[in-house]
Amino acid sequence: MSILNKRTLNLALVFTLLLSLILPSVSLAETDTNKGSLTIHKYQQEKGDAEGTQTGPSVTIPEGSKALPGVTYEVIQTHSFDGKNWKEVAAGASYTEITNDKGKIELTNLALGRYTVQEIDGPDNVILNTNKFSVDIPMTYEDGKKLAYDVNIYPKNEIIRGAVELTKVNEAGDALAGVKFQLYKADGTKEGGELTTKTDGKISVKGLAAGNYYFKEVSTIGNYATNETKIPFEVTKDKDGKDGKVVVNWTEVGGFTKVDSNNPNNIMVTNYNQPDVKKDVEDKNQYNVDRNKEYKYNITIKTPGDIEKYTKLKVTDTLDNRLEFITNGTITDGWEVTGTTKDNVTLTQTGQTLEWSVKDITKLTANTEIKITFTAKIKPDAELTKGETGITNKANLDFDNNRGQASEKETDPVIVTPNEGGVKVIKVDKNGGAKLDGAEFKLTTDKAGENVLNAKGTTIKVNGASFTGKLENLATKNGEILIEGLTPGTYYLHETKAPTYTEDDGTEKSYRLLTKPVEVKVANSTKNEEVRVENSKSGWELPTTGGLGTILFTIIGLALMGIALFAYLRRRKTAEQ
Image (cartoon, rainbow, N blue to C red):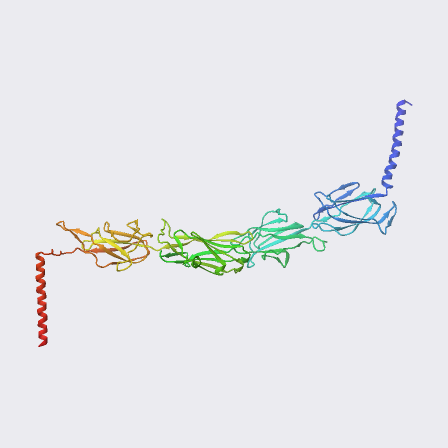
């Protein structure tokens, strides 16, 4: 035998010896041990998800599973195992453990035998599985040929899921479509996108995991007030904790939220109208009035159905500078209120701004009208600009419903238009009709001519130019005088100086002065009233003092007087006979 063959034989013998030593030890590791282990793997899973498995020594964790800490298990030995025989144990070892942050419970150095495993407590977001089941240590592998002394089990817990429904209605109980909501988790993070109520006023959310949530209104529709109050609810397991039924616990919020008695998972949320406000002047949108006459503005507020929840209700009215608030002595005398008491409203005036504030809103009545009435007038010098049809005025309502709707509403404008008219005086020769310059007039409010109209502080114009004094000594130019901006009414035109004319021989003479005033009625019109005033020439001339004409007139007068006396005496004598 060669040295090489001898060496090869020796190596084979050594390998055979080593293998004979190793194999018995492996066999002992599988059959002679008297200890084992149990590992409980806990994951939160959806219904129908695959479960974990153990195939031989390898462990398969369900894909996408999330570890579930906080589940409490009770493990109790019921039987012992000596490698061949099973024997019931009267008071076996007992273990109570809680899954760690990896969702595991690891029990090591366990005596061989049979153990009962039961879930006795766990977090609120999963359904507890309290059914007992048994685990043997060792356990036969799936191939049925070998024993597993380190056993892995995967008891399943389904995540609690629930469906919630919200119904939006108005005060009358009618469904409101188009109202937008956002669903939030309790920590304020959004759960999905915005939700909009449908034609039945409903929004539905399904598959909500157990936990605390709240709805919050994002926007509303029409004249309804926004209600941003949080509407909280909780998705949780039922009182027995044995199935996945969702119990939604609604918190009553501010009297506008209630649970639907027919469907405890549905909350009904009421939206109330915003308060309405309107303004009128003497019950009209447009009012014509003389500058010297007072009139009434009315501001009417319609209270909403939830007015008692409001924290502010205030009306502001800023008058145009051409308007005047009439206080009648004190600020409290210039206005009145109905729908609440006057002592429940405060009025402050800052310049042209009037502000009414309700002191105690709880004293107001829902769905009623509050009317504020105050007195005003147009200032005498108020003048419309080009294109204006009148002086506009609006009011603002400022309110806060204490639930996210804090805003202002503005009324439609109302218009007051000052009544005014004009007169055009045309001075003409009675015979020829020629226009006469140089005639002077005064305009009065009385027939006697004592009360001359004063244009100071008014918009009166004479011949197109503003006039600031008394309307007297107004001379015709081109035979005319134009007076504009008069308050409608009756006036009297008095001629204070007659025009003159020149005779053929160059002598300047005066027309006859009018002995009576001309009555002028001015109407509210853009068209001026035309007054034609005629003057006559004298036609004859008075004799010069001390001349022949004077003597002639005297003789004639005496003769006439003598004839009259003679006739009288004769009639008397005849009567006596």
